[in-house]
Length: 342
Image (cartoon, rainbow, N blue to C red; front, side):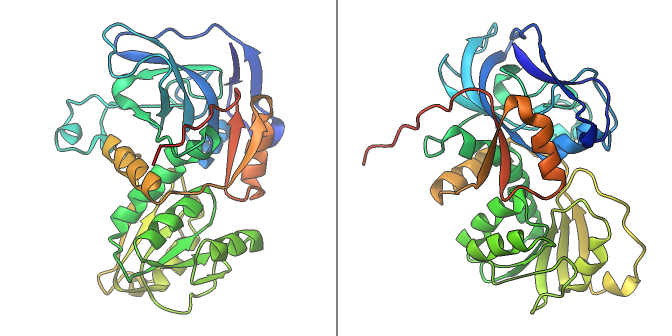
């Protein structure tokens, strides 16, 4: 099968992903083999490729926003049938036995595996995954529209939940890429006012188009104090500015898996019972709940399509903020979407 391999972490400008022909995987007990139609391109993929996340597997196939169809079942796999359209996300497996899994916090599992990082991901024609960590894809979404929902969407949704924001609340977004352009649609569905701070004028314009009350530069103060804010950009220097924009009792959520160093700041920014939370991975419940909400709205993702062989170019564009919405690799022709009968 065709796949993009990362043999050693390197700056994306050096085009470290190698397109190669390799042996296809076989599903183990409880796994499904999925033929990939498309795979979203995530900033976490960039962190894997450039070594911001410590290497765990070499070579590794990146990619963890995978949409495709079940091709073959492993022994005892019964949840899906061949031909079913499914999605595979970042959390590949959790042990189910550690103290975090026992309390429903499998996102904090002591012995997890992650798609496209510790196990091979979706920048390939075929992928295997445990059937219990695979999602049915709602019929409302075409393949390329569904792909960004599987990380940008799920992590944005978890960030919204952790923020504690409710109807009528004022919510700030710092950075307006793939996750934010999905999360704003959920926030507006919940009747939340959104204020977007982002350096790129195109992204400011997109935020306004999607219903933001205001959009300005990254370090511009929003016109009102915020009840909560989410930092999607992996830039630690944003944290003091976001704290300064919060009301007393406000919550700041850090939505990335990696962030540059956070500078020191005055305790006055934190005082007043403000708090900072990080988002660590996702639970299967996050994914299930989000996909249900996404289909109900329904979410409209904005995507830029790249062929699999141009994965390096897609990641380069992502690094340089040249993607409006989300980038998606097309591996095979998208499946037709069945429109539900009235």
